[in-house]
Image (tube, rainbow, N blue to C red):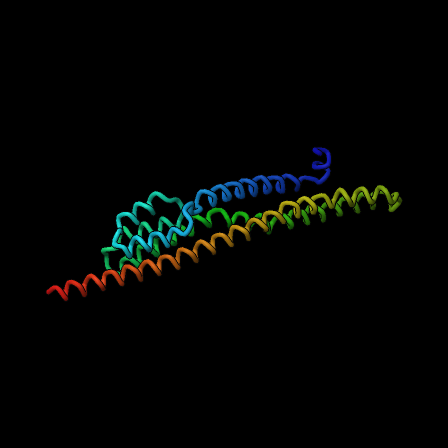
Length: 213
């Protein structure tokens, strides 16, 4: 295997480095998304019910004891429920942006690796072909077909290696991007509905106070 690797030429080393970085990022992101998942199903429905029952403290404790960006956004929204609507929108928007950036961390690295490894492989093949044909010229064109074929397949090793790294890297990149978009959409929907619930509650309290007066 090592001999096969070395026949690919010096550009096999940066391709190998890219593969190590890609695997590291993929494993780290898989672990991060696993930890970031919401372990309590339909947590917003439970939080919504508690808020409608006037049990804001219970809803806050539920969110704080649950992992994941959705629960984190809910906890922030409940914690600042007594502030003005404009303040709550700004705070929740900033918190959501931070959560998305955390989910999106290192994904650009996967995109770069997915784009450059095929180019590195192609460059290795081109340089290998150049060397092969230079050798043919040195021999005055008197080259056995098997010798020429051997030089060509050795040159193609880098292209195969580059594609072998790029294809799974791009697949995982789009998979993670889809997960980020999904979580971002959920956070946006949850934040909007939470603000609406808080606005309705605040309006009801104000109407009750005016009625009592």
